[in-house]
Amino acid sequence: MCTNNISIRQINFALAILLIASACHATTLTGTVTNGTTSKPSAGDQVVLIKLAAGMEEAAHAKTDGQGKFTLTFNDETAPHLVRVIHQGVTYHQPAPPGTKSVDIKVYDASKKVAGVNAVADLMYLQAGKGDLAIMRLFAVDNTSKPPRTQMSDNAFEFYAPENAEIDDAQAQTAGGQWVNTAPVPQKEKGRYAFVFPIRPGQTQFRVTYHFSYAGKATVNPREVYPLQHFVAIMPRALGFTPNQSGIYQDKQPPDLQDAIAEVASNPQPGQNLAFEISGEAMLHDPNQNAPNGSSGTTSTPANNLPGGGLGRPGEDPDPLDQYRWWLLGGFGIVLAGGAVYTTSRYKIPSTAVVAAGASGASSTLLDGLKEELFQLEIEHKQGQISDPEYAKAKSALDQTLARAIKRKR
Image 1 (cartoon, one colour):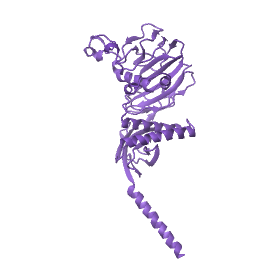
Image 2 (spheres, rainbow, N blue to C red):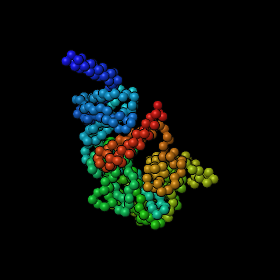
Image 3 (cartoon, rainbow, N blue to C red):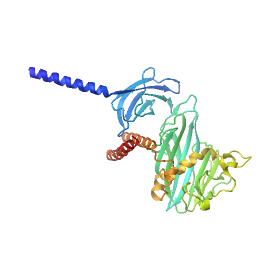
Image 4 (cartoon, rainbow, N blue to C red):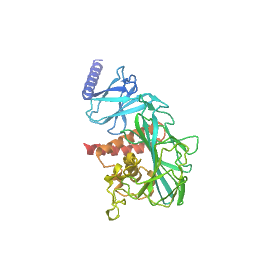
């Protein structure tokens, strides 16, 4: 009996030592969640701390108090973390690198329909060859709601694609965030799709890549769902372009895109005939490649003598492409460097295309991208969009890559 008592005391003592040791290594992260719609503390929101060092592991949970404050206790302070706040069914994230002690996160009230949410542009990239016409579309949506709110519904943003098109890839991006995979959902009307993705205050961009069979000539109809400021079709200059209706499009030179042309339709409306015919075969070229004889293919007039960096002429209104300069370059890089999955899998892409896409290889950019991909993988797995074997295989590969990236960064 005595021996048993001593044994129990020893066990309790050992457990106490372990608990004390664990407490010594534990650290805390505090934060405040503010409701950007009401400008008041956001009480009762769920807060999740996600460990990113080797995957997407939920390390701690909390709930905001009446002052919007929370405290998270976790063990591994050397690993990068991500703080997730869930407010009215919409998630908001804030990175917490090693050493972070406090974070502030802003959330917004959500509604299915929000006044001040407007689509502003549809940029369509086209290239044709080897029996297929490949298209990548980049949509921009502005949320200028006052007070600011998040629009969230099962059809937050909709678009049309040809009925015979096969969708290859789709992502969405909030202002200042990373691209997140999000599959568009087919609607009852054939060829119509919807993104189930929150449109937070600021600008949200959607991009989708699809292809369909092509025998040297095809009619392309954007079929806009919303009023826009501009629809822009960007394609190799060698492709033939014939609009169904004259007077709709203006020819423009895309900024810094070699051998490409942009056809711009200003203030297009839903139902307007924007259809055009494409003929021939040609691929977009890397803008970093030098033109023959060192010429850019433009006139000899210095570009900086014209408003908008050479996109207009003195006395004319500012060129509509000027405001889309970085979207054009960024979208073009996506087409070349892998955003258009189907296109880049079938056609040889110049190695400098990675630079064109802005993927400089910086470790921080790589880490951000890997973390977002892991986050998206977890979401798709929980929603049943991928099987357990597919999830395990993808997660293992991403975990290994993330571990190597973190090791290099350190």
